[in-house]
Length: 301
Ligand code: NDP
Image (cartoon, rainbow, N blue to C red; front, side, top):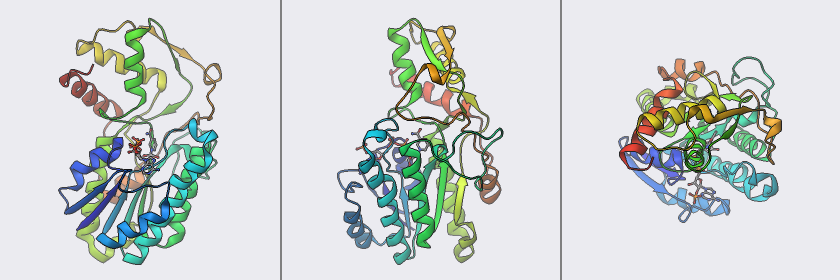
């Protein structure tokens, strides 16, 4: 299997380099080789390699900045995935693409299923949804994997930012009225590789698996409870912090206004993915604890 990975240097892209390499011939590109700001330039890359699978982990993920940088977010999250989809359809390749809980407005009581109506509250959410639509409209065989609250030892994320702040501040105010599942990039990469393995094994029959899926860790939490868990784990690994778990104070989203509005309920029902690919997804704490252990082992706590 020839696999083209785009966005290799992001949280998910970095983990995918490891898992996808085991599936076949992998070519992995970052921003300097594949610029999503110039979507048409991606066509030549794809035609040169003629992959069987394209995995796109690149995205404009600066959620607040996107509010004032709509053109760049649109090019990267909407136009470029559309170009990838068109080219993949011509090549007869599969396209794996990641999307977000932020396509929803957070108003539902329970966990969101794939058929729920979207209503993005932010430019980021809107551009990601429009990217999904371009992929679906292209007719390419695809997996669109919507996930939430991604973290990894490498890259920028909420957990690492809380750890940084806990070294300098005695009190941390953390939003306690948004609910979701922190999802490790490692879990996403492993689940992607397993899904592709199944697709390869099924051959032509795998066409039935083409579609949109929710894929996040099991369970759910709030940013506040997540922060407390991270701080407790870090302390258990010997981190010296000014703010321990008790110093994380719950606040309401309205007390912490941001340029982009976030959904209050980001919980994703992942049963379609689990049933289709025969996987059981671990509780969110499992990979959070692994990340803290890894940061500790690297001397980065
Ligand atoms: P990261 O921000 O860690 O990585 C995104 C990658 O995209 C970076 O390597 C970045 O390059 C690259 N990129 C950004 N702009 C361009 C561009 N114009 N041309 C080429 N490459 C570009 O994101 P994640 O790994 O966390 O996200 C992976 C996927 O998961 C994305 O589709 C995202 O929308 C989705 N997702 C992420 C969530 C999260 O909490 N992070 C939550 C829900 C979904 P560079 O390194 O040079 O900046």
